[in-house]
Amino acid sequence: MSPAARGHLAMLTFSALVAGSFSLGAMIANEVAPAALMAARFWIAAMVIGVAALLTTGIPRSAAQAPWRYLILGGLFGAYFVLMFEGLKTAQPVSAAAVFTLTPVLTAIFGYLLLQQVTTARMALALAIGAMGALWVIFRADWSAFRAFQIGSGEIIYFWGCVAHAIYTPMVRRLNRGESPVVFTFGMLIAGGVILTLYGWSDIRSTDWAALPAIVWIGLFYLALFASAATFVLLQFATLYLPSAKVMAYTYLTPTWVICWEIALGNGAPAGLVLVGIALTVVALLILLKPEEEPARSPVR
Image (cartoon, rainbow, N blue to C red; front, top):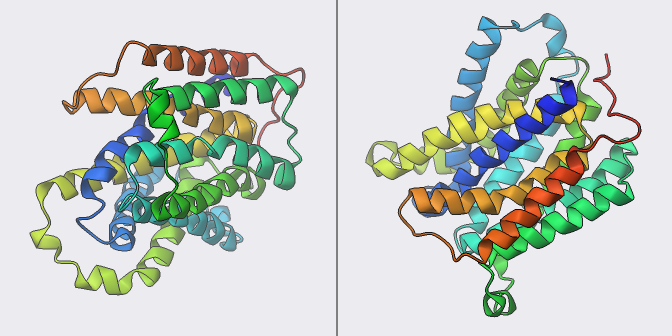
C-alpha cells in the first residue's frame, strides 16, 4: 500500500473516531469546565503517546530541536478543543456539525497561504459535493430544518475553533523536520497540555474531580485515548503524505459517523433519504482518491 493510500485509510479512521466527540461531547459539555477537561485530556493522551513512542521509535534528542514548533501546534489544537466545548454549551450538536463542514474549505485556503498547495478543479468539485452531502446528512434531508438553522453565539465560538483546526493541518507539514508522527504528536501534546494547564488552572483547581458523574470519566477517557491520542497520530501521518485540503475533506464523513454513533447510543436511525447525503460524501471521497498528476511529496527531511 502506498503512503498516500495509507494516509487516506488513516483519515477514514480519524473521521470515525472524531465523530464520537460530538455525541459524547454534547453529553458532558456542561458537566465540567472545557479548559479543565481539555487539560486532562491532553495529559492523558500525552502519557499514552509517550509510552507508545518509547516502545516503538523511541524519542530522539533531535526531536527537542525548536520546541516553539510544538507550542504553536499545541496552542492551535488546544484552542480548537476548548472552543468546541465552549460552543457545545449552547449550540446543538447538529448546528456544530454544520459549522464543522466549513473546515475543509478553510484548510484549503490556509494550505495555499502556508504551503502554496493549490486546490485543483477536481479537488474543488469533490469538496463541493462533500459539503452538499454533509449538509444533507446533518439536516436529515429536511429542508425546513435547514431553513430554520440559526447562527448563535455557540456556533460563532466554535467557528473560530474550526479556524484554528484549519491552520493546524498545514502547519504540521510546515513545521515537521522528519520526526515520526508518534514523536511529533507527543511533543505537540506536551506543549498543548502545558498551555491548557496554565490557561485553565483556576478551573482545574475548582473542579471536584472525585464528584464528577461516570459519563464524564467515560467521555474523558474516550476523548483522551481515541479522539486525541489515536486521531492526533492519524492526522499527523496523513498530513505528511496528502494535501491539506484532501486531509480535511474527510471531515465531511463526520456527520455520517455521528449518525452511526447516535444509533449505537439508542437515539434512533435517520430517514431513508439521508442515505442520499451519505452517497454524496462517498462520491466526493472517491474523486479525491484518484491521484493527482503530481503525487504529494514526501516529508521534508
